[in-house]
Length: 324
Ligand code: GLU
Image (tube, rainbow, N blue to C red; front, side, top):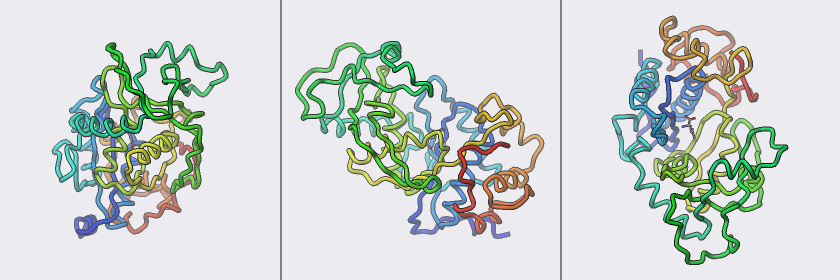
């Protein structure tokens, strides 16, 4: 079988996809759904696929989970051309925990825009300023620590000596973008989240900064991820603009939910790769995913190489959730 031949990236690949899991637990069907769709899109385009480990959260990330994620991807045949715990490739390291210097130099550039400022607010301070009607749980920073001269040019002032986060001023402006699945979207950052954090008070880098810097430096042309991150896209596009970097295309996938309609989580043991691998073959899992993705009419076993020619963005259900 020419499985390998079908799945090799072209030498001069112009499509670069990626999978960027956080190694905080074993993958479940929802994570695999994202990985398979992103991989198929890259392979159909003759492109490359990068595995980046998003281990920014030192408390929750574990190397052991990163290795299990790799093992589960390989069990399904989802090979990557760059990245992983072996840091294979020219754009490494591919573990975010090892990329602090790169984020620090992006932060310097952002500071030069005059739009960043130190913030001493605690979570309790921020919660106390939230509007009571905000029932969706979103937190909108009200600008408590924002200097009054912002967004005009910066004024020289020393940052506080106490531990502080660094925030980025956001304009009260609509940021439009096009999503492969959702079509035209618009987010106003001032109304959606307010000035957001680039680096936490404990010096951990924020996801929004790291993901933009990494996707740009790794030459990613297509980001495929769950639609829980749809609203982060405008934050990321704003950072691309300030850093003068070229943004990728975005495709936000429906979230895979359990029978109770809740998004899959680590608690859904039966949907965890740990359980799935005990009772299913890779072909059965791929068939299930391909069926959920609308690529095949019935839930029947299939191979990755057989799915490449069937892949089409038009087939993916334009829904916010898919129940398994
Ligand atoms: N690390 C994120 C997660 O596992 C994904 C981020 C992204 O794809 O932009 O949910």
